[in-house]
Image (tube, rainbow, N blue to C red; front, side, top):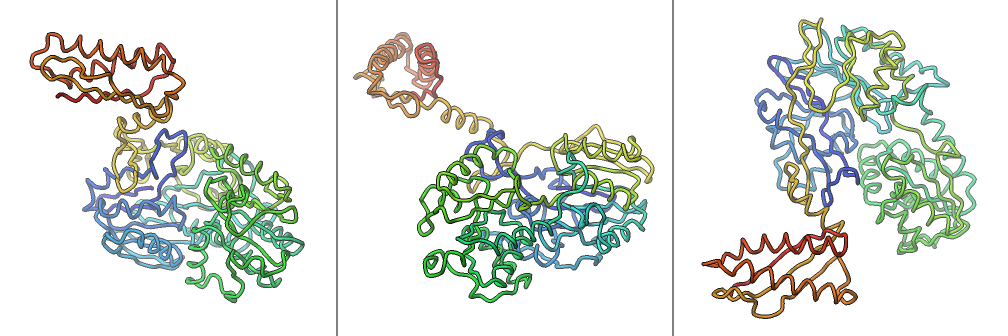
Length: 539
């Protein structure tokens, strides 16, 4: 999410979410949302939410934040609007969004701000860049981009589009940095289409293609190739089915419906006429591809005649899951094709060479690298500087940083920042990161819990009987009877000692002391630190 603010208006660019990785240390959390406190405090100035394209890291937060920021109108292209509206169906309790569908190249005015759009290339149709006009020049936001090129030579249509934007007085460029650490130009998607077409044409058995459901152009190309070659397509995975439905609705894909069959009918056709489009190339445990690899799929069992194409790269953090998937696949003796040995995948983000070409086409006064980790942003900066961009006119920011451009001549980073504390989606709950809750979840996951249930005489403080102990994820009780016997003795002594001179008896205070004593005992005996939960019942 980027925010462009003038004296009168605020324009919000994109509203995505982040998927939770193991490094986030947030067990049980579904998504991480952008913190909108800055916008909530200024919602009276928000004129529009402009969406550059339909990937979840650009639209995923919309259902969760719109009410908080005053339900501003949404401006985007047709396919993206369909994807936003499809997602809104999952939240029927929300007010309808005010959707304005525009075409690439069109302009519109919100409040006192004029906004222009231009077409860009990404891995999904209807991607667009945005120019926000100010009195000192345009602020250009690329969104996610790559360039259509032939051996590093940008094609005529792409060049003309960017050079047209470059004719404006461009004050600042907010440019995608996701692949800024890679030199040169990215692989062409056209090469991927041609490679997959050749694989589909020459397959002698069933062909299973694992890819991202968000790769609209690739999915459409595969389906059209299958139709031309008389093959049948099976869609496996909810997200792939949803996105193909949207592509059909948007008329981006026009094929004979008979091209599609269900997995239930797979055995009614020759093996060499079957192509399966599947989710799960990142090793997701319950996705279709992993279920096939582990013989848990209801209708598809892998054989040595099958070919699996992993038409995706490995997202950082998913290496172990992908390796597990590959191991399971190879145990089935199937033929595997991946991006490391064949041109079956290309990124939707431009390499450093493409980013420098865009700088030179746009000719902005200031450059602000966005999207990616800090080292991506720094790589973007150095690529620009090494190719002649003034170092003092590049700002590398962290989340929440506020840049102020004064009179179109000076850019500085303010000492104050917008709030950036993580906002988490936990089931139906949306809120700030609750450290106590997450710490408890991590503790339970790592060391388990040790529950003590004891009945205490409310007058004497003596235990009525030996305490009950329940252990989950800590130790196996039947094999640790000596530990349990010692723990019961310690519990009895601790409770009775704490209540000895207590009048009246305060069991809440006793609970706290008992938890500390038992935690220390268990750590000493087992080198583990389970969550100790005493339940004392006064009778």
